[in-house]
Length: 134
Image (tube, rainbow, N blue to C red; front, side, top):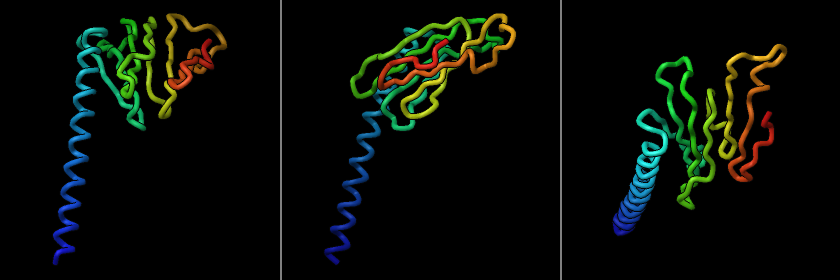
């Protein structure tokens, strides 16, 4: 019987510990969302990478015709700072993997013979390089 109470006590302790970590994490994300509202404006979205170490915040074009520039930044949650920010005339940005961001620029008039891949580049948030930038 003592073993059962001991195990229940440990399980309760572990579940409380996990919840407090999540709350701290959520508070940190809320602070970044406040920063995003200041830098980007009201219309933005923030997305964690799969390892939950970086947060991508970007503007959202409500018009869907991509008339407004895309503004985005990458926030390093462990160091609590912006590590990359960029404004491009038109385009999209998304997490491709835990540490790679895919940015697609959309030209006003696309050049003959070019495909979407010609207007796409990746950002490695670890190295902060743009290996495929046109």
